[in-house]
Image (cartoon, rainbow, N blue to C red; front, side, top):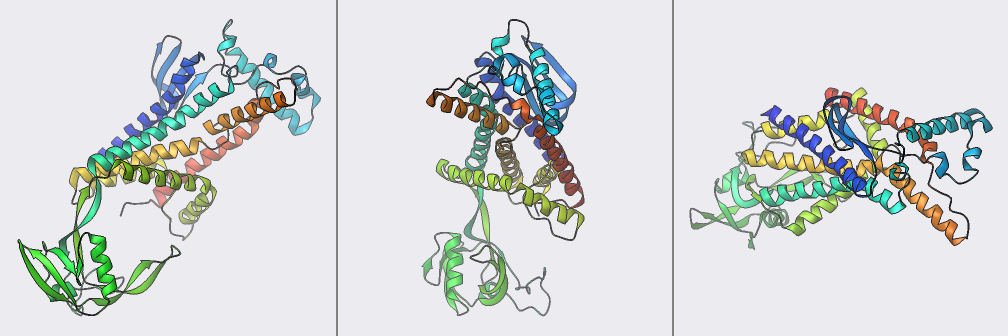
Length: 436
């Protein structure tokens, strides 16, 4: 079953990429842009078919996708009078000369892609709002898909929720850090009091047991003194007296740090069931997920430093950023782990992983750097701002933003992305994260 989970994630990732590119393709065609290619993956083509003026295909390396729109960079004719001359490589020296040369070559190549008579169908010729719709269409398609997948998981299947029914009664309370009971360990308070598997807690220390968090709070508030407990056993109520033990356990402090503290422990484990969420609860979970995803993206450099430390040093790898191999491993574990929820539990985890992947595609592509979608969005926003300022000041239209000038930085970003991919691949092999 491990490889079933991996296969589901691979297919799901390809479908998510295809959906992302469709978010670019549909508005581009709607606005009349000439789109020559719609490709899933990179490298040599495995399958391709031309339909109309667009070639649709699947490539060998499934690490992304793209649509090819003609005229991504403005031609020399589209730039204001005098701009091209000022950006002439021959008029600069050193790094500026090389930068201008790269930009000029890119504009020339972009112009060669435009068929005769199709100059009005280039991306660069679009208005700012249409550029924004096209470039934001991909990321927002992933955002919508992420919500749909999460809704299917949390509403259609449900989340694990503890009930007031007992699924296990510990024979003892092992010392902190111990995995199993020994002969030296005393019986657990629950076992000593006569609690049994299948008992349904009715009240604890006089507090009605409406749900499991209420029971936990009653145990915590009761301290180490004897408390009255009422359970439903086979339809009949049974009154018991339980005396919790004070045990050192790891707890989450107010500052978010894990510390050790003495807490009252009984030795009972509740039965868990899959409880369906409401649409409002899904919305709250989704908003929290978007925020957490952006937090990971914003702190990505710090996260990667941590990955380096855990992969090549003695540090423990923290949950967070993970590569494709790691995602596949987690998906495989989700379908192979023996849980109380069976296939439903596996499906729940796979849907949640795919939802998280789409959130990551959304947030990552919104980074305002080329060649990511966010870089083109930032360029369009800057173009709109420049034109508005020019109108307010009564100055000539400054024309489209020449994003070709950012190509040297784009190459740096591409190299950084490749390095990140290699690092995460190595980390997922050497120091993998696990559901356990």
